[in-house]
Length: 359
Image (cartoon, rainbow, N blue to C red; front, side):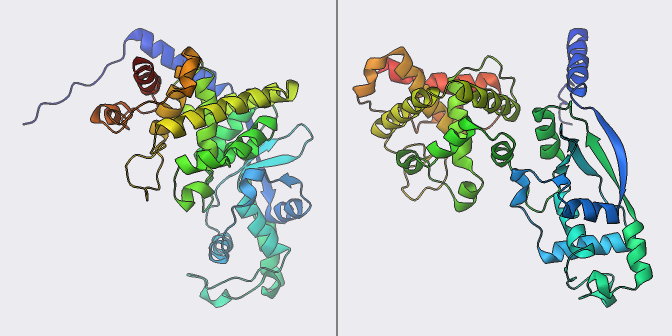
């Protein structure tokens, strides 16, 4: 019989700390329940009483999925809750459910034609107007429940909620959500730097990763982590969201910050390009199309910190061949607990120390 690993038993202080964390996070969520008829949902959607955030607009269901949803509605199957955030102007911003709402509007008030259905085969190809008046009335009167976060819920609460319950056919990732939820001068700055040619050359990635705005994610991490990790608590998405939110305000108050931050980025990318022939690639293969985040963080931020500590190395050249593809470095940037603060600081300092030792 294999030896069982003893179960970890938290001590009283850890239990109290966990309870405090639960209470703290719960206070951020304040909501109430509501119920709308299909007719009202279709009308409010058409009249743009429901606001679709930018980060949800580009994700649309294909006709087959729309038809399957309408089939479920017609059959009386349970429909998932709609989630809204009550804006200060009284309009409801859709946190989750925009595809369902737009499908309802297209079918009930528009010209949407059902595709081949699995169960209700005899109405395949129907439009709403083809149904008997009695059936149309029953559909209009059917109600769907919603949950509304009140206006006191902060941006991070909405971000967390969308990330956790997003039911779209293509889920928006964190970079995409952040891009839409945090419009502002710093976010625009991130988008601009993600197109910098040297940076693109050193960060090969698949078309899917590019479309998911992975380079914007890397630029955001570069600035957020190089500005300091005092408030980092092993949750990158929350840390980055708060950082971008604060920096949008900082860039609005002090537009000249853009020049300072651009210089930091360009200086670091130039240093990396000169000293790391492979850029942020994980292998020597020129056809490599992957840029691991942990390798990027280690090299980019470690290089910047070394430049900060010893500015004269900006014009020097280093031979990194003996360590940047070594097993030691691979272990440092390994995936296990990669987002833990200690691991993050460890891989950044590994590169910084190697550069300063070789100075």
